[in-house]
Length: 211
Ligand code: ATP
Image (cartoon, rainbow, N blue to C red):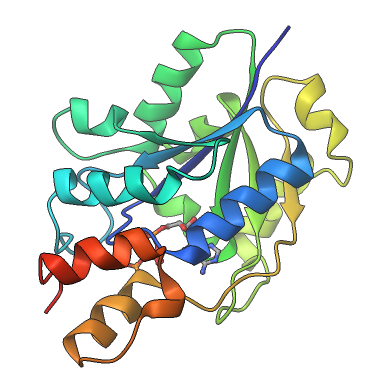
């Protein structure tokens, strides 16, 4: 039987409950077999992460350890150079030629899509599910909107019927959490207890990360 695989990319500096809640909600609502949580080892569109890829990945592994349908994926750590999503998706497509792939993105990330490396190729490799994100304007930007119209669907069953090529919006009751906020709060000696799994919080505290 064909597989139905979600791909959730992030810098995860650190992984937080906003990521985990959104990924789990999409997995359940869409009926994905699993969601690969792909660590962006060398993120091309932002300032360098505070923690190393190895440190971020060990937090990611801990964070998903109690969620059987979320899998920590280090594929971008095995490549050199910038971690372009188009390369990751091409690798997934080679590995799973006849399966449905679903890239999961928050609305603010999706609105920046046109700045991504070889962005027009993404929809030829995968479906895209866009989630709402607290604290952001959850509207498609005008340029993005005109591009996506032919691919948009309101029927999520199409995602499983085809291997790629559809864009679907999934509401996820978003949590107002960002990794930036967490790093700043730790620096300011404020609590981040409600924003992370307890295991991640322990590791961050023990290693004095982000102080
Ligand atoms: P930073 O604050 O360091 O930029 P971030 O918290 O925005 O990080 P990333 O690690 O860059 O998160 O992960 C990016 C992906 O996770 C994007 O698709 C983004 O929309 C999604 N995401 C991040 N936080 C949330 C949240 N609270 N709810 C839903 N999606 C989220």
